[in-house]
Length: 109
Image 1: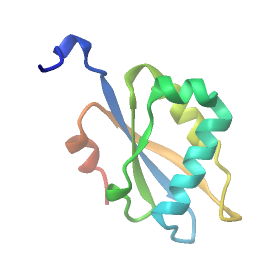
Image 2: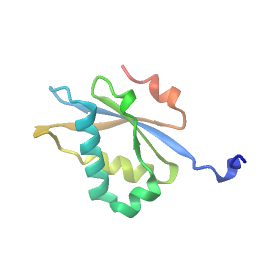
Image 3: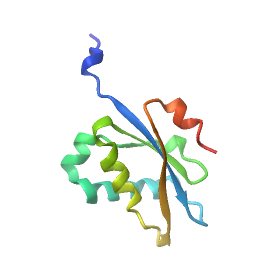
C-alpha cells in the first residue's frame, strides 16, 4: 500500500560551494558536514531535519544536501559555520535551494 502524498515528507535540495585552493574528497566533506550539523542542532534536530549528503553528486568542490523543508535555515546555518576541512581554511556558501534535484543540478559547474 502506497503512502498518501499528504503524508510524505517534503524535501529541499541545497547546493553548497566550497571556496578553497584545495580540492577535497567527498568523504572528508561529508564528515565535516555531519559534525557541523550535529554540533549545531544536536541529535534530535538531525532526526527531525533528516539531512542527507548526496555524495554521488559531489564534484568541483560543490555538493548537495537533501533536507526536510522545515529545517532548511538551520541546516544552512550549520554548514556555513564550517571554517576548516582537514586543517585547511575554507569558506562555504549556499548557492541555491530548490524542491527538485534537476534544478539544483543545473547550477553545478
